[in-house]
Length: 361
Ligand SMILES: *Cc1c(COP(=O)(O)O)cnc(C)c1O
Image 1 (cartoon, rainbow, N blue to C red):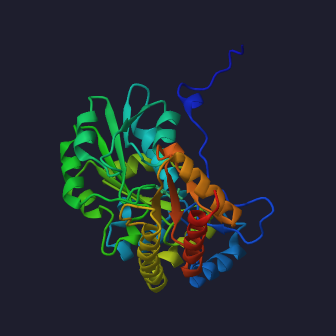
Image 2 (tube, rainbow, N blue to C red):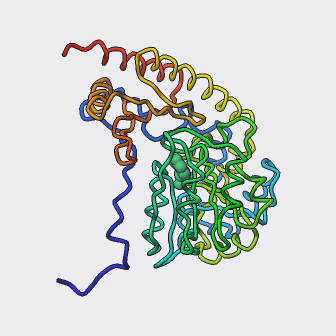
């Protein structure tokens, strides 16, 4: 036995499982396992990245001023209350590192995003899982789970992998019910897919215990470049900036994000097309006997009869080159999370489920 040991909690972390992207022996793979934008980043965004390459020998700007300015203008937010990170994952990590440690509790919902638990454990804190009601965030259950040790409460709205969402009044009731010293974190990774939704920004403005995270990975099609941001009370932003590495974002990332957030036309077209195909996909699956909750994000959580059927459907789709996401790790063993692809992609999923239903047994 070695005397060399990591900090408490770290060995409890199960490694994050990314969405699979390859199938042995299959050329024409359709990856629908990571909620990526099927249309990719906008042409203007790609051009901005290309233009920024000339300056890669320079260290990047440390305060992200132009990016925060651009985000602030588009969303009507104070740039001084925005912090940018290497994906919103990094902002989640900052929050845990800064506000939760040994003895402290970090609440997350039953089918909540894996990074809340991982970041809480990495900070030495105790993650606490709180039940949902039929795959929907349950505010009463969260309030019941609060203790004097609660420091952070994470909810994603809409949630991943369920796709469900709770209303503004419910979120406000949760924020108002938390004890002093606890922060409500609203993860808005999918907020852009909900028409007219501010992700909770107005609630952040109205209170001093609410923080919002956002990402460029989903609607903006920049998952591979790793850019996210947070919006919160000035005091919290000030704390997070103290632990942020000064050069956490490259100029390539910042140039891409500025172009992406300013290209409203592309963002709007992607949002509308996602909504159209999401409804179509859910209806076609329902007609094949595969139910799903109404999703407000860019994926559908398809429910099968049981875990064995979900596994068989996954294997069948894989044999056709279609990769979706098993979510047994999210305590949904009978479900498959299917990213809404472009029209051809959605048709391929439906044909795949059709042939799964018709297969000889
Ligand atoms: C995808 C996702 C994120 C975003 O992660 P990034 O680090 O910004 O790529 C955050 N929260 C949830 C719930 C997500 O599904």
